[in-house]
Length: 482
Ligand SMILES: Cc1cc2nc3c(=O)[nH]c(=O)nc-3n(C[C@H](O)[C@H](O)[C@H](O)COP(=O)(O)O)c2cc1C
Image (cartoon, rainbow, N blue to C red; front, side, top):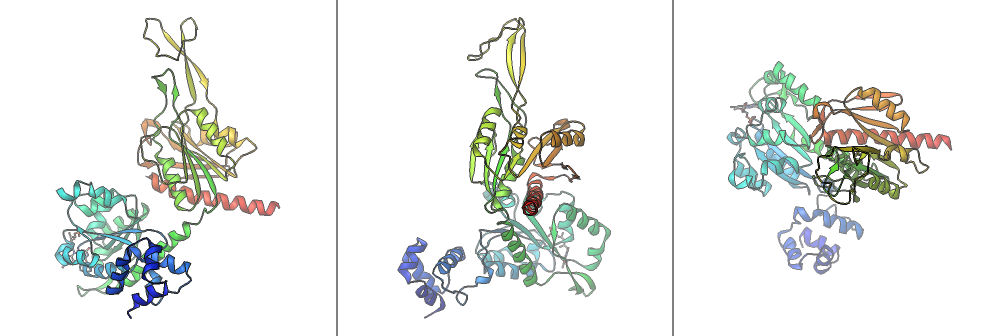
């Protein structure tokens, strides 16, 4: 009896396993015949065995399981170490991680895409201008869907292209169009590695949050000695796994914490056709909701009208006006944390005639020769109302878009509205709204941080780290107070 047949028998036999995994018994019989569980079923088998308390260590490579669906994109560029990436593919294939591979033109001079395709049991992508692939906007899909993009080996050329924003082939275009974590494993001749241009590119990329698996020092294939050797594929694979495990730890950071997030604009009707609103796209708030959900928080997102897809989170409530947003937030309390990132319209406009008579707004206001005036009616301030109420969450965070005196205005909001942190950004010249990038500063009572310009996804990631610090401090204060 082969190993997989023994395993199936330990788990209750073909019929029972098929029923539990909701697949045909013939599929299980096939696993037994080929003595292999397909990669996409490893996780299900692992879960079943842990439910049944069956130790399957001897039957499947359990040490490489990850607890959530993970997708890696491996980019192979053209260096002497390109062939070593084949071993990385082989190691990843032993796990339940989903893998796509892209090769540069130069990489194809060293190894063939056919070899990569057969090893990965999946098409290897090589062409930016592929009529077939681009019907599905493949360069964007490949850029957006992976959790990690690993470039191994990364040539001096590809590092230079990424550092300078060049996008003249599939690999460099994907790297430029991605929000995913990017990890480079450079490998090159020591003189190339130490060249000032490469040093500057390396520093630029580090500053942008790109991670590196440093090259080893030793004898090189070219006969020289120094730093630039491609690290052992096993150690690269182990580093990627520990990176994933770090992510797994993060995925429980906000377990059982309830978080309310407002996002997008609100709109205030003038009549059944016209309204007052603002340029907020909701992107930054949605990224924060998505990051907190990834870290295990129970997120309720209260969103004004937006035209972007909703993020994955526990609860989404759609509202239109400031009053509806306030009502929704109030109904969702108590909550541990409130993040007000919505751009709430400050006023409603009440149309009046020149002689100060009210105009019927139940029907469309007619164009006449008489001058139309508007009276402003202040909307409720959601941030202030909640942070001064007796249901105030432990942590309250506000966003402040300013066109001038950013720091001063943000600080006075922090104090007057009784909030813990203001995330302020400069929106003069139409910057920020709708963009994928954001430059923010954080204002607290005794702390000010100016952050570098970065993607809204990256702002969300760093902000969630900050929120974790605030929550830890709050909980410690709470313990000392008791
Ligand atoms: C035999 C040979 C070996 C090479 N090895 C490396 C290398 O290890 N690292 C590197 O950065 N470039 C190396 N190059 C140069 C790159 O192949 C070249 O810069 C190419 O333009 C890289 O293209 P890519 O970044 O699009 O893959 C090598 C070239 C040759 C001919």
